[in-house]
Amino acid sequence: MVYGIANPELYRRAGVYAGRLLKGANVADLPVEMPSRFRLSINLKTAKALGLTVPNDLLSLAEEVIE
Image 1: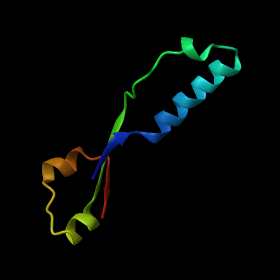
Image 2: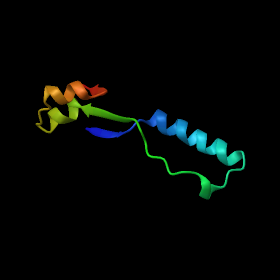
Image 3: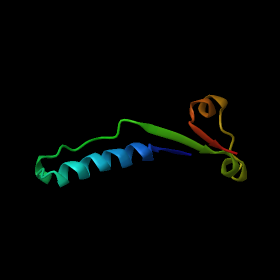
């Protein structure tokens, strides 16, 4: 199970930062940003191999379920 940032969002924000730097912005003037979108992925195949059961409520919240 993984709960973390959504990679496409991370790549987009990195592009915005690179654009600001290429336009001459000072690194010290750029704000520190926190991710705003997170993603929950559950690997059922691994959970079953470990003998774990994942509650249906948790499965319904996951954006990606690997079977």
